[in-house]
Amino acid sequence: MKHSSPLLGYFGHHKGATVWIRSIIKQVCKIVGLNHVAVSNVGAFNQDLAAFVDQNDIDFISYTNAKFEYVQPLEPFKGFHVIRDPRDIVVSAYFSHLRTHPIKGWSELVEFRDRLHSVSKNEGLILEMDFRRKSFDDMYNWNYSSKYIKELKMEDLIQNPRKEFVDIFKYLELLKNSSFLELAVQRGLESFAMFRRRQFKHSPKASTPDDISEQQLQKIVKANDFSVKSGGRKPGEEDLNSHFRKGIAGDWKNHFNQQHIDYFKEQYGDLLIKLGYEQDKNW
Image (tube, rainbow, N blue to C red):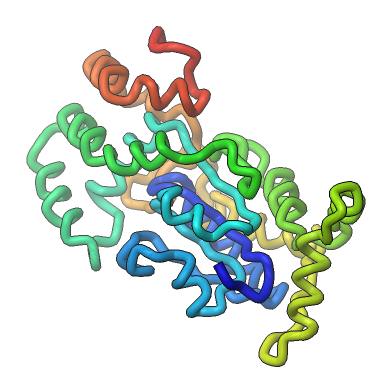
């Protein structure tokens, strides 16, 4: 991995608030002067994310549908990874794939949408559980102990987005007064923020990136609030024809019947336990 400054990254999974998070990152990067690029599948980077980052002089990579095998070669970097209750992912994906998700460039979804329209919702949820298998495998096989990645849950982000995004950008050292200088001194290392600025200062083709103030960040987060994106609805107020359908956690309880629960336990019970959403399969 050859990069002129420490790479920053966001890693997520389909129906895990990726559009919302990417929008905030994009606006922050525009202010601080970092080259942000978003990719969602291995075809976008020819199965070599590290080479793609170098070839395109990327400072901040957003990789949704993330597979750790492609992320690991980026090391060292500084990033964050967001997961969501897989049961809520199933419900969100079902309604999205049934009605609102763009089909351009995703031929598999065209066929799958036709199948969803041909069956009942109960049957469709079972089909969606199977359709999510690759994504759930990626979540299960993720390295949750990487020293380069801050692990987060979408449920915490939507509960208190202003606090959580402040914590994220402090961690990434893009927020003013968020330098980890003391920790760096203790480790005998230079902070990411200091190193980044030094690299940009001596780069003939790049301007020195700035920090963003907490006030600026809060404005960006507010501008991307669910009520704004949904056209005025509050979280919990559903619109089946909107990409921002409902905006709450735990919605699976409103849609799963016992058949769905039993099938999910059989197929993905271990995933829920590994991710910390259940202690055992007795839910």
